[in-house]
Image (cartoon, rainbow, N blue to C red):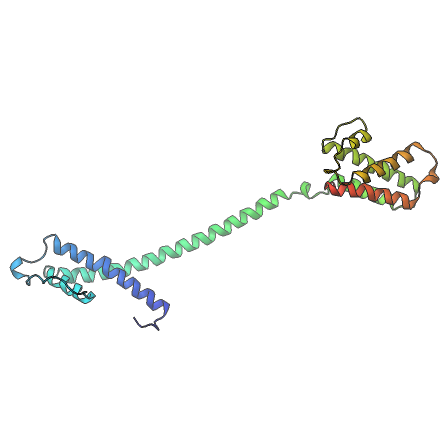
Length: 233
């Protein structure tokens, strides 16, 4: 085969060669061996021992001479037609398989998109309550009203208590729970202590002048550090 032959030519040659083996040589050999060949008197003398490689044409010539009259020609013509028909059918089936595979892939992709859309319902897209509460805390601490600052700190302390509960710390008060904390597992425990102590200070003292905007925002920043460590926000 010419080295410059295209891929299509190579494929055609390979299919032709397979067809020759499957539909000509094999059936011809079967016909020659099952007794449909001519009488022994009509056959040429048996060949001598093969001592050198034989060519394809020699095999074809042998089958032509070993087969009954007209049998090889019928097989040749019939199987050539069958080979062409088989190739066409194979190509058709391959096209169907490729199309079915593409459609299956598209359907799977569509199903995955629908499944993902079903998971992201309106409820799941809603802002978590913790985030809503924290947004209110931030709004209150950034207002000009000192009363709002106090409410922001008190709400943040309530959220701290809920965080400690979710982490499994036991105790009647926040202080009891913080005492049970392992600093290796709770890196922002000092910030939690400082914020909670400041909360107790403003909760038990009625003098409004004790709280400044700077202090309030500092305390809220301490709570935020704790919440972010545990992905509470």
